[in-house]
Image 1 (cartoon, one colour):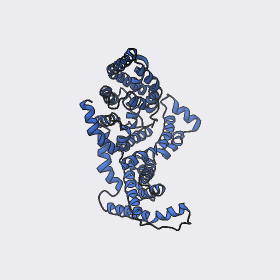
Image 2: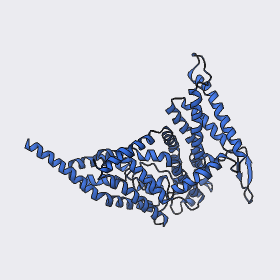
Image 3: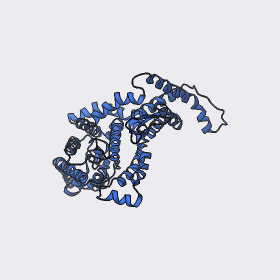
Image 4: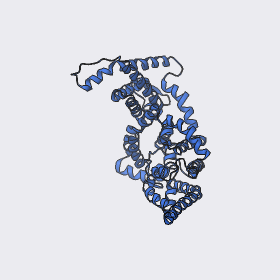
Length: 443
């Protein structure tokens, strides 16, 4: 076993394994995923609203009226702009499942606590005036979406920990055995819910006496903004890619583990781009969720689609050819477990090099090309990660052909990096097969 393998097995895998099994990160990842179907549905309406076809806006206006775009994007508001609410419920639900306490009650309590932590006013500028006025008795929709996501995460974790602690201590109202289970669970949740609400209420009152005024302002200024600034830079993108793929070569799902930490940042960056698209302003973020899922992870983590194509077309060993036939179908839809565990890439000193190197180079090339305007930025449309290459690039950039071209360029880069390592690996497989045949002949 090489020194690299020994280091990965003895030093990296134990730490990464503990991170992967950490219940809060698992709940964070699974809870945010709950919002993804809604965001993808909202993205379909975004695509219809912003097709880059000359005369499209005028044609739609002639059929559906001047307000056609406003009405078409109603579902966008109903999906994107409640992601913090949905994620708050989902994270609390999943964490409660880990603790084996009632997840439905935990989700409902955290949802109430999140609303309690959110200011009940918004600023509104009437048409024809410059001065904004304060409108009370409302929940600002901006804080229910991506801007409130970090607060939702913290509230979900805090409220569920309080909920779990009180229940485990037995400080609950227990009903007689004949009471229906749903009623009994509601009464069990009564006292823990009261404690959660009181804690968040007191926290809000204390924060309102500070210059921050709200928990959203504290989290935004001290946590979300610094993380977003780093996470959406080229250095942040490279660090993200390196961590994801180092975990994969150890046999751990790197995208799921690191995504649990970076997912909220990438999702918020995606939504900032969506808001800019709707407002008709410049797209702000190069690095967002689609930057990785669409332009880097083609074929799955490690950009292994070209490796699958190599096996299918250029392989000389039977093992490589058969694996190529098995891997090409899933690879087109960005699923690469057959390659990662079948080649294998895990703990393989030859294949782990291009598996890590190719995505890093592709991240750099994509960032640079988007920064100089050679390729378009992802517009905030949440394209499913299983969308095949080229199609995914077109959809993620609002139908811009240069998005598909950027994917094609990255596929060429992946091919160039993988090919020499593929040749060495395939030659080893061929030698092993010949050796086996010689042994059988000698017998």
